[in-house]
Image (cartoon, rainbow, N blue to C red; front, top):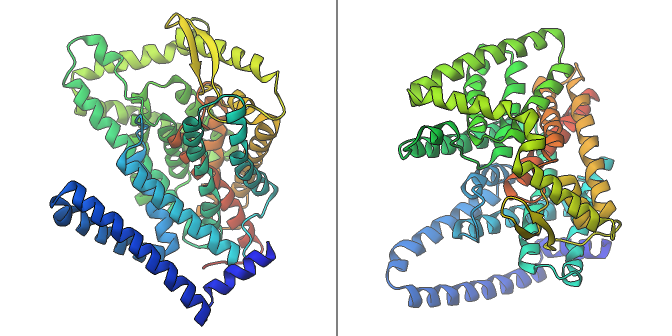
Length: 485
């Protein structure tokens, strides 16, 4: 590894040999891209010259400008996730473009860290556990072949899991930059607000097409419920601990928007996850902030109802009735709701199969079967709704153990960061926000696997990165070290 790093460092040095090597590579790449563009123009016609090529040139110039500013580039990648957050079937053009941009950004960051003398992003045992998990996951592809799984499905799962690699750049950005915690917090809240506004727009559109009252009462926009849950908790944690009225006013608006979007998903699992996060927050806070949390809850509920009547008018009574019935069914739905019963049956079937291979696991893209009582047929699927059982089934005890160790340790560090009274107030608040978000995931993971869909993995990675970065920043400040780069 030392020899490889030395060789790569020599390629980046301003020498004649390095210029010759990179020059040949640039010419070869330019020739290949030129041939692709010529073939594309010949295939698609003249419109490409007028539209596609100028857009491509502008995108290339923007990419060059951004990659010279790695931190800003990371923020753009994070906010840009909104355009691919829909979880549509198949591969869309915008998803392909975003994936290429994401991997280029990650590759640039990791290569820079690897080559930078003295820079080590594996600071804690939790960091090492996640890094080992990310290294070992691609090595399970042979298991997919051995157990007759889908390689296409495995590649799709691998892409989703690769979003966990965002954890390290986020953590280091918060730890090493004085403005890192504030900037990443803005990104997390902004992503939640954008997704919530999109869902609210879709819900308003749906209301324009309803023909029966029950369609309003039980209408839902199910997209990105995990993302909305975490952004709601994040906004709430920052709001409760805010010090200025300006911050409180702004965060009140973002919290209402994100929580409104979460309610419209009608996802009982993430409603309960939000409540768990709020309870953990209440326990961790001092009495002054406990009272503020209760007051914010009461005022937020009243404000939300008033805004709802303004936005949807007469539909609000039906909507409130539907939400109340949905929430009231939580206690009984565990034993009576067909979809939940189906998931318990699914979990049992997967556990029976996992017992036959508990150490290594079956790999990604490998289906299991169980009898679906809703469709009254045998179902074959690679998605395990219980995230804990899903990790065990796909990656064995090693994968489950590494992830649980990383998860629990990161929650602990977030709470420790919040309890450091002598350091940066905002970093401490981010430690609290991240910790309660990760606590919320511990409940929702029972019925909704966050390690399968890209939006869940994205927000899980962001939350963990914020939490660990806040702890590291607080620790550096507590020792009188200010790091910026």
